[in-house]
Image 1 (tube, rainbow, N blue to C red):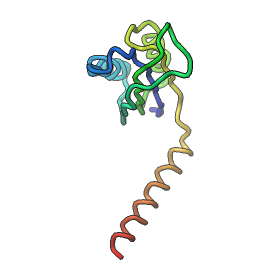
Image 2 (tube, rainbow, N blue to C red):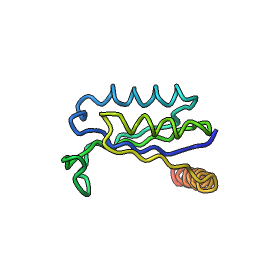
Image 3 (tube, one colour):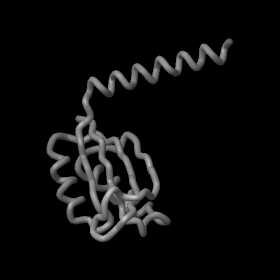
Image 4 (tube, rainbow, N blue to C red):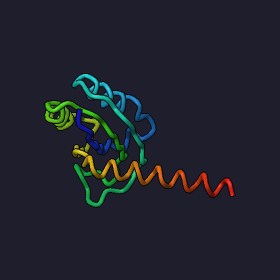
Length: 117
């Protein structure tokens, strides 16, 4: 399975109760044979330009692993979803991900070395 980054802009009215919308995305990923590696709620932010008359959106980032045919199905479902204002699904460059993991590991080792001093 290939790793992807999914960015979803939810309707700002969902800020107080975002759980049903995020559960819907999790179920969508799982139904298409994928899994969510990580997710991060960035909160409500101002949009660069109004979308459908809205100036704000709740930003949510996912890292998902999906089989080859799943991205098309997920995007088709997100296009008609009322909770999402916009979405972006992009594949993660494997080399970049390995480099980031090595860099994080190196920084962790440096932090441990500083703590021992």
